[in-house]
Amino acid sequence: MDPQYIPQLKIKMQKALAVLQEDLGTIRTGRATPALIENVVVSAYDGTTHLKIKEMATITTEGSRMLIVAPFDPTTIRDLERGIGSANLGFTAAVDGNILRISIPSLTAERRQEFIKLAHAKVEGGRVMVRQIRHEANNDVKRKSEAKEIGEDEKKQVERQIQELTDEMIADIDALRSKKETELSEI
Picture 1 (spheres, rainbow, N blue to C red):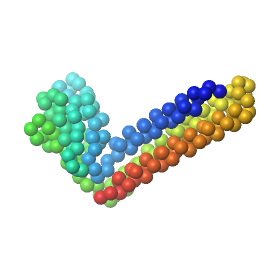
Picture 2: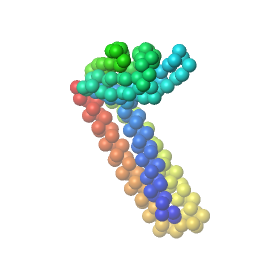
Picture 3: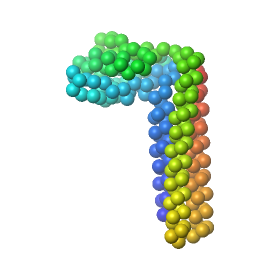
Picture 4: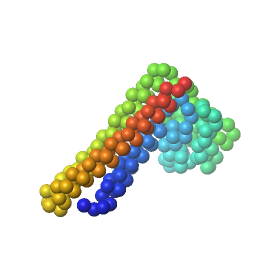
């Protein structure tokens, strides 16, 4: 078996973990974070260009409930304002000179529960991605064993390493879930 097999498998699983992390970042907590709006697509320059906000502006936080959007091209400020308003995120942008100020309202208890359920669904999706990678790796090891490329002892050893790696990644996913739940529960 290739000595790089397990490290390559770990990289695949870490990519799945990174996707989950980015996905969880889009779930709104009561705190302002650039991830809430950075991927919103805005129609700019009279509808001729469609760009993500992060491609058009710098997004920073001011306190725990305010986002500041500073466009690279000040002529697009109204396009950004319209794009944020039409994204149905639950907050509006206010033009303040050459920047946009976005106030993030507090979450209601009901809305927090909805977001916790959404986070659980995304976390389960992350677990499924990691398990799918494990399944493919185990099938690969099984094929190599049946083709007599590796012996039975090596097969068992690699399967054990795959399971250990999977357990480690699932623990990381559970830590992400706990962190997100804590963020959502804070008032």
